[in-house]
Image (cartoon, rainbow, N blue to C red):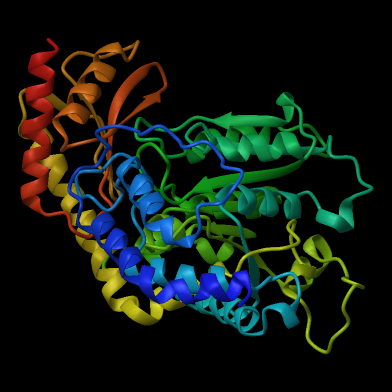
Length: 450
C-alpha cells in the first residue's frame, strides 16, 4: 500500500473530526480567542493525517471567530457553511482557471456568473468581465484597463489623472502607484462628513485639469469606513460631460443587486466604464473572491486580453484576460452558495441588516454616551464615545475591555482628524437584542475607562 493510499484510508475516520471543528466555528459566541497558542515547530518527520484533528482544534481555538454575531467590526464574516464545505471540494479538485481544460466546469460557471451579475445589476448585454483574487487585484485590473491596459502599454501614463473621494479605499491609491502614477496625478476629492463624494468638488477638479489630461474618476458604492454610497448617477453625468473613465468601487455595496428595497443606490451604475464587486464581503463566501466588470467585450479583449499559446482550443481560456495567470475556482463556491440560498433569501438578509443598522443608529442617538456621526446608508455605523478622541488611546482601552469581556467587539477607524468606533453589521444571526447589548457593553466599558 502506497503512502497516499494509506492517507486516503484515514479520511473517513477524520471526517467526523473535521465536521466537529467546523460546527464549533459556527456555534462559537466568543468573537476573539482567549489566547493565541504557541505554534509547534515544523517537524522533520511528519505527524500524519491522523494528527490533523489536533491541528484543526489548535487553529480554531487561536483564531478570531467571524461567525459570532458579537464580531461586528469589519467587512468580514464567516462564509455560509455551504460555501465553506464547497471550498474544500474546490481545493481538492484544484482546478486552474488559467486553462479551460484544467477547469471545464469552473470556466463555464465563471462565464455564467459574469452574465448573471450584469443582469442583476441592470448593466445591459454589452457588459462582461472576469473574476480576480480579491478586491485589490480587481481594482488594479479595472484601473489598468482605464489607462489602456496591454493595448496602451507603449503610451506614457503621465497624462492620466486619478480623481477619487477622500473616503476611497487605500488599495486604489496603491494601484495607481503600481501603474506608474506619481502623487500629482492622484487627487483626493472632498466628501461630506459621511464620506460621500461631493459632485460639485469633483466638477471643479475636472474643470481645472490641464489640457490633454485623461481623467479617471472613482465613485464608491459602500465606503470602507462609513458604508456610504456616492451619487453614482451624478458622477456618471460629470464623467460623460468631461470625457472621464468612471470606475465604481462596489466591492461591498454590489450585493445590493439582490436587495428588495434599496436598489435605488444602483442608479447610474450602467453608465460606468468599470465596476468591481466583492462577494467575500456580503455574499458569505470565503476570501478572496472578487469580480471586475467592464463595459464592452472589445474593451476587455483590447485592454485585458493576451493570447495563450501554451494550449490551443476552440473555446477561449479564462486566463487569457486579466493580470493573473493561475487562479482558483472561487466562482464555483459563489455559485454553490447562490444555488443553496437563492437570491431572494440573500436579498432579505441584506435588507434586514440595513434595517438593523438604522435601528442601531436610533439606539446610539438615545444614548447619553455614544454619539453617531452619520446616518447610515447601508450596514455600517460610525460613532464617537463621549468627547472627540484625537489620539485613539481611550478608544483602544475601551476596545481592550470589550475583548476581555468576550462579547461585543468593534473596530477603530480614523476619519480625518478623529478616531472613531466602527460597527459593521454583517452577521445573519444579528438581532435587535444584540444591538441593545452592544450599547450596554460599550457604555459600561466607557465608564470603566473614564
